[in-house]
Image (cartoon, rainbow, N blue to C red; front, side):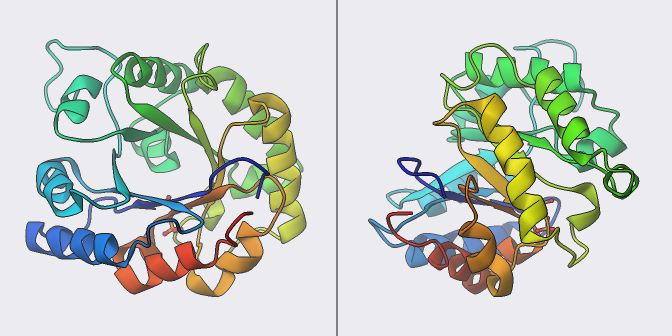
Length: 247
Ligand code: PGA
């Protein structure tokens, strides 16, 4: 945790669930979110479920995020979604540059940077993901890779706009494996040096109720980006409850 920075536990639902399941999950998270609790909560459902999840979250402490946006404000981009459209259906945040998008959709740092700038222009808070591959970790390049991604992916004004950074080692996503606490702390210290004192720095990659307390207690870890465990309300809320109130 970082003094003065409110922690955030963000759930990335990826491409999972039915509309009915999305409504039920959002309702359960909203019901379980405690006012005045240590951490803020956010869920990021698939695009088509955003309006229904916004309705399910109405009046709660839980924020709504999307999982991607296009860099352009509008235009001939079949299948893409503009940041302002997300804002209009109630999203306040958008996850950008997730490793699954970098890998499967060829998103470069420059693309992520343009998307983050578009999100900020539309009044959305970008959550920009960075993280090394297993080969890069084994080669001792993790910190250099992450520094390079940050340099290329963050647009000017990112920190002032409340932009959030998520460190997600690619090899830890959905695998049940996590870096050592020392390795997470080292990368987050490097992120902090680039991001400034007030930027929220999330850790992501196999965060579960069983490891959340240790990870969230590390210096410069201001919350978590949670995939698999965010699909079970009780697990997601247990991760949020692992945040020590007051840092
Ligand atoms: P995981 O996913 O928690 O299932 O590892 C994290 C993420 O991809 O954001």
